[in-house]
Image 1 (cartoon, each protein chain N blue to C red):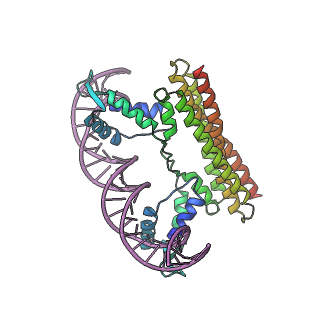
Image 2: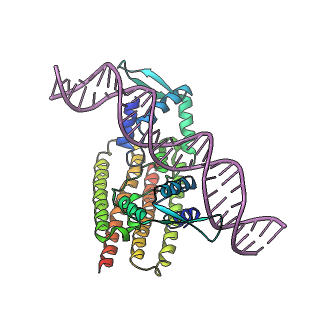
Image 3: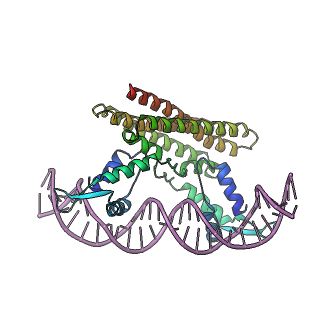
Length: 159
Length: 159
DNA sequence: AGAAACATGTAAAATGTTACATGATTCA
DNA sequence: TGAATCATGTAACATTTTACATGTTTCT
């Protein structure tokens, strides 16, 4: 695929667990090409390049996938704000939690919509998509359950 | 507190949702001092500085807390690996999920241990700690539930 | 014809980690 | 006395975002 299409795929397919910007994709593709891990074929358009993995590139990808997964640094702006909730005050905290709950509901609906469209994909890819999708669903459900907890705790504080 | 104590507090108290390294804390403290947002008092030790917020610093903190929370960039190495699960194979995927499940159980136990030690703190701080702790618990529970889902999906694939 | 989408890249700035260097204090 | 902990900082490096510049193709 092209660099542009790669970005689209990352946003649309991996969006809930991965992100890359153009500023990383294009230099990375150039590096990978220099290392012989991808090669570039002229596309149907003169101004675009279709990249594909070379056999060496596939081997390198597999090796990378086998390396231990790095966990992302935790940096949750919402929880940081709620930790300093005494400074913000009850009402502002409640607003933040309600916003987060609504956002989680939206995410959940999005995942459910994708799940119904998944039936047509061939195995075993479908299963692996379902696994990553299930992670998104559980995470959204957890956010909703937490928000309800938090609202109760906040209500208890006001009383 | 000192820069060192600040780091300790971030690791131990905010650890599940925030992280800072010394390389950021010390330059940041120097900047904040230059801006008059924190001031430095000589501590009981000659080689250490106790920092405290100035009134301007408190106001700035409140203003920052009121800004919309930035969500962290999603980058989940585990889900990325499972998305390419067909390359990794069933057994390696299962191993990854089991590892993640065990790690979530450990996290959950840690949160429960903290929760029992929380009873003594004064309100309203206690409630706000409970809210952030609850987020950790729900997230760990979600990880466990997802892992069980994923193991079933993987088992279905093998059959 | 014009707007939206497709497509590629670079440069500057911001952000963040890691490793290192140094020394004081506390505790066994 | 020696080890662990407390304490401060810098420098090099790596990562990542953002803004910009440019042009093509498709669709209405």
